[in-house]
Length: 175
Image (tube, rainbow, N blue to C red; front, side, top):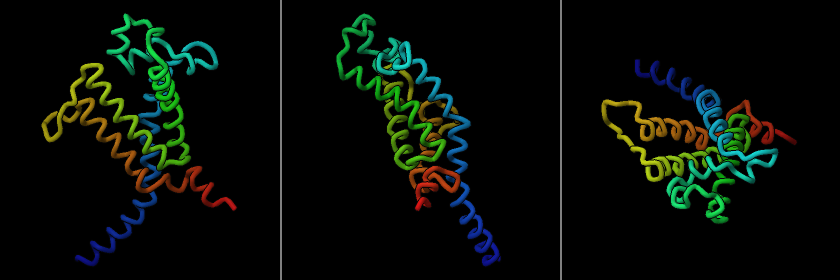
C-alpha cells in the first residue's frame, strides 16, 4: 500500500512541477491582472505620456498623508514623490504583464511581492486600514488573508519559474 501511494504521489509531484507555474500565472491573470491595471489607470494623467504627469489621485493613493498635508496640491510635493508615483504606476502595468506572458517571471514575481508589501503598508499606515489577522475564523481580511494568497502564488513563480508556455521558455530554447 505504501509503495502504491509513493508511486502515485511521485507522479503527482512531477505533474505539479509542470502544472503549478502555468496555473499560478493563469490565476494571477484571472484574479489580479485587471485589478492592478485598473488601479494603474486611475493614476494616469492626460495624454500618451500621462504616466509622466500622474493624476492627483495617484498621489492620494500612494502618499495619502503627505498629499493631505499639502492641501492636496501636487506642486508642493517634491521629485521623490513624483518618482515613486511614476515608478509605482509603471510597475502596476509592466510587472503583471511580464508575469502573464512569462517574461523574466522570477524577477517580475519578486517585484510584485515587493509591490504588494509596499501597497499593504500604505493601506495600513497611509489609509488607516487594518492588517487583520491570521489563525482566526474570518478568512477574508483584505490585507492579511488575501495578500498572503497573492504572495503564495507569486512565490510559486519565484521558485518554479514561468513554466512551459512562457516567453522565458522560448528564450531558454532559442539558439
